[in-house]
Image (cartoon, rainbow, N blue to C red; front, side, top):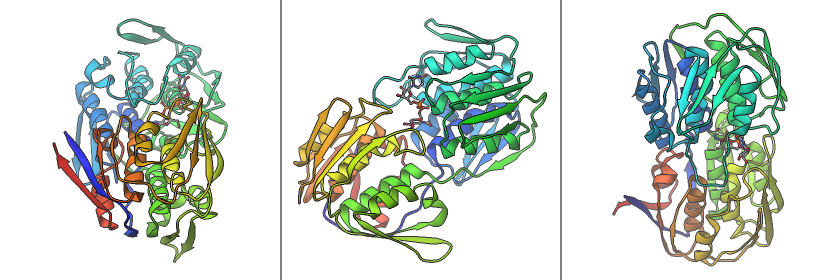
Length: 420
Ligand code: UD1
């Protein structure tokens, strides 16, 4: 087991390298099941969740390995459609393999997926959507999915679930006729998935809007393809809140910041100046937030992302004034708050909201992460605090951030990874 030892109070300066988006790469790994060939995913983050997804591909008979920062997946000889419990129990994204397995083998079976401890995570939207297009679902110790006649339909999601949208896109690529996915999720990662699927022969349009159209095709290509996912907007957003909490000056490439620019603007009204140096670089000059951030409510894209809610709360802990953060996507996602309060942060949770009253200083503390983004919030608080902090449970942070401690040291943070 490892932990971070952090000495806070430094301003941060330098260039931040942003990895490919975790939430693009995980469904892309699932989608590679459809390609029946080799897929090269460039700038792929080396994170624990990617490791688990690649283990799933291997458990089904495929090959997966890194060449530098490129993940290579070879799914030509895939021969299984039952996912091992020890892997699905670790990661919610294991559920995303159901759609492609149904298309390729006509069936899939898995125990209910695990994942971050951020509240209830049912699969009813996935199941309802799959049933609409002709999939039989039987719950049991292993939930089984079986494709009968996949027929294009107009499917309306009751909520724009990211995973259900992706699963349905992958389950319907070879359906007879046209499938319309209405009230679908609009996240940039859905556009990445559409682009990848079209690269291997699918006919999908509308990603990024409220309706995705999937025109069923008879065959997909089994050629070798290369794909570069979008930069991780949540990782970039984490560094923006970190900069605002600590002060200093951070440099991002233009593509890294493109999908997080609106986060930079929210922070920018209060704590940073955004300068576009040339067509390649943005510089963010941070000062301590002059006031709270007002009321921010998380919502599906293009709303404020739930995956940045804890990092915002950590930053609001040192803003000069009050911030109210409501989570409408995962209403129970405030388990990390009791740990942040150990720094002296003035935080109170009421139902699905957290009220932060900023303090001039917070103090180093011993905290323990129990989920990915909550862990990131603890790192931000520790770096903004005076004195030394310990952050345990960093396996949760490694699930979604590629060597965050190395990236932090590069910009002047005092962070050590200690084996315990
Ligand atoms: C994805 C992201 C995750 C992010 C989340 C919301 C990936 C790999 N993960 O997760 O980082 O926090 O979107 O932006 O892309 N729901 C149901 N029934 C369902 C499915 C979802 O009630 O069948 C609810 C969930 O409990 C949650 C909300 O819908 O309250 C959003 O979930 P969803 O968009 O499906 O999240 P994921 O795809 O699991």
